[in-house]
Length: 323
Image 1 (cartoon, rainbow, N blue to C red):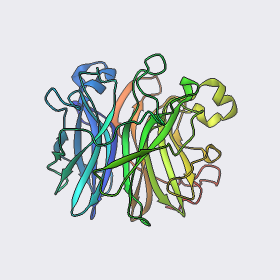
Image 2: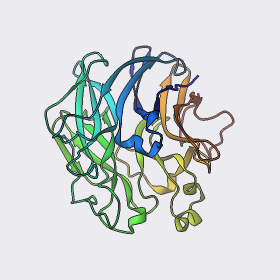
Image 3: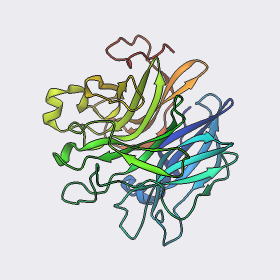
């Protein structure tokens, strides 16, 4: 059945599991805007719940931009949720009107029940560090990329890690995309470190997700096609959609030799895939981006098993378990 809202577009999403319930948090904007490109600047975070990833019950909206002036008074974009110390923690992306929405930062909201959320403090918690990452340079890129935080706890050390869409501070501007990294002992005080991927393939690696599957760490991300010169060397980089790198250790390095296309096609019909562990095995959720003729869709697709039926070692993530 997927999830389609008659009055709103849906796009990037993330999930949290509470018992048998899968809580879906998603970006949404009114279809009445007409132009889907305007959705990024008229955005709020919606919420739905399901037990099977197919039939969804809508719940109250979660967050919308703060009243001005605030660091997140323009947009509240993609994030992630984890449970720690008896409560739920949502890290999300914000931008401000003061900077024209061009500078991205990461902040926090918390909840006791996954339904009612409260912002933490008046400031972001994780910001880009010029030691490793490109700052706002409109000649190189239209924004300071520091968004889509995926936060998890290292099961061995107990430390928390945030994986973030970012860009390297130097190199060809067309292919500076990296996955940035920060670490914390308490989810409040963060230290930004070097990226866990090398630049040189994509302009940006969006909506990262890091999961342990089949004895390896799998780093998923979504991206438009790479430049033609890259595609000539790496054909899979020419397909928009969800891609994957893998590593033996949580912090990688995630080498490009492990690059695989998880889900995509030349028309870009699906985007932003997330792996979800269920009783039946891994499921891949994506949102519907374009029709084959290029029209915008903006709704959640039904899940599909991962690896797909009949997958070979060339198309399945290294070490991924059977569904």
